Image 1 (cartoon, rainbow, N blue to C red):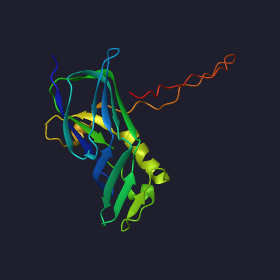
Image 2: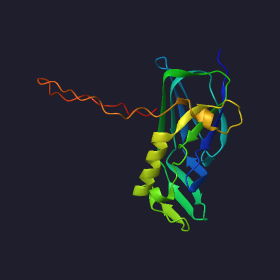
Image 3: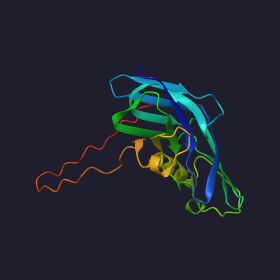
Image 4: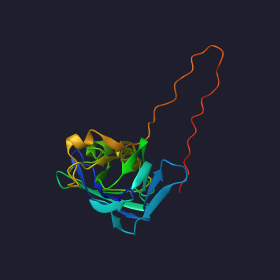
Length: 203
């Protein structure tokens, strides 16, 4: 029987803007098994702080990991010159996939939210000495949300210290699904559209 594994959820380092906290309400973590109709879920208590959160994940072979940040998710970050950013990332859903599955059996993992550099004051038009508050519908919030969705990943924590090194980041265990478009059909006689539909069902 596979053993459960320790899991650290960490906020990735920024570029001139460093995350200090991410507090979520009504969030959950969902594991989807590689076998049909298998899965496990963990519902997070209200006001859960995700930054450096330590928990466990059930043993087994999982092909998908979904982290939903809940109805409200308050990100707080600070620039190198002391400017504070507060952003509501509520409703963000991070989906990570592993084609061959992840065998969880006691080894430690780190779920890093945002790849290094995902937070950048220039990217959201923020002066380094200003305080900024972003609502859930602000366009700059969408930039942050997209960075989380497209660059977060699950890694094996080789040394078990809860902190990722550059060598550990080289091999993600689960990453965002590919967003590459379907190849175009250049045949002379077939002009049918490609089916690019996706299943966006919620647990």
